[in-house]
Length: 456
Image (cartoon, rainbow, N blue to C red; front, side, top):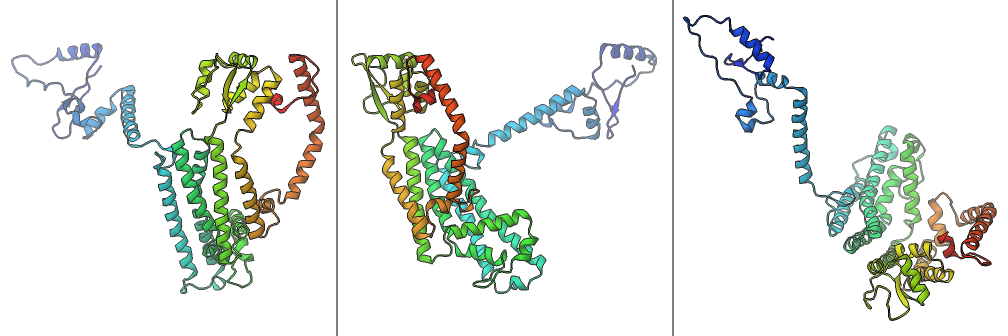
């Protein structure tokens, strides 16, 4: 095995590598033919160390050409380990610098961040609104009808992209807020999300009533001047299909929400819509935040519940804030339950007594009496907003104008056809459930209740 030397260009001094035992034996045989001692030879320089062994600050760096060669002579596994360690250090440092955020939204790491993100979104959208409004009042630009078709199409695309940017900025925050207020376990997060949702819902109402946005769409996309006829055929045909669909959808949405009304009527419609959003939020919050507690009386019922849910587990699921009694009371043949979905579904699936199943089912489906006046007010305001202010026959007609069904009559016809097709299958399945009930519980039952269908 020949001895391997790498020469540094500056000093032409050899750079030694560590050798194996065989390589050392070969070197000893080669050096046995060295000149006689009568002619002394200069001593060999001491073994050279790697740069990262000499200077710790050079760890992970290659400074000279000879050191690059030296790095290439390392075993492949060593190079891989070094690269992996370097990559791990970079990843750990970058991960340490990032704070975890909710829904991967930037800077959403605390409930109070929802309001800040909502205000930032509103500011960004207002800047785009001002830009579109200035393009309407720009007297130096030629009218779209006198511009070349290519220029007009490009301007229509810019207008649609600006409108889409407004929608995207708002929906990025309001969609996350709506999800958080519905599913998050923390009341603080739900409350912060609800505040941001209410703020952006009011802002969306002002966007839908913004005349400048509607005029920008009609002037630069549909080529309709204020009060003039439409000349949009060539421009719309020159737009890609996605742009055309977006243009028609935005126009329908503006007109559906009353852009054609006078300013006073639009403001009244916007305020009514804000009240509707508030009632909808209250209805959802009652379902999420409030829990109904009720007592199941009777020793047999109490024993049945204890057989399914031990008192230690029941005490964690049922936390009555006033009575502080969450388990079976030995002194009285009753037990306190709650309408918690986990507890309710478990009992409906495993309770044997039909009367107890029916009681649990009715209690869980009548758990929020305070939502009844909210629902009544919601129905009335929806009719006032859709029928009295916007001119639709009903709330259903307004909601379905841009949906696939199109009208309440189509929805009713679809449901009737589905009922007719499924009636035979429904009767067969109900007969199967009834036979299973008779087999398991015995007796000649005449029918099956809704709670027992859930159990089955």
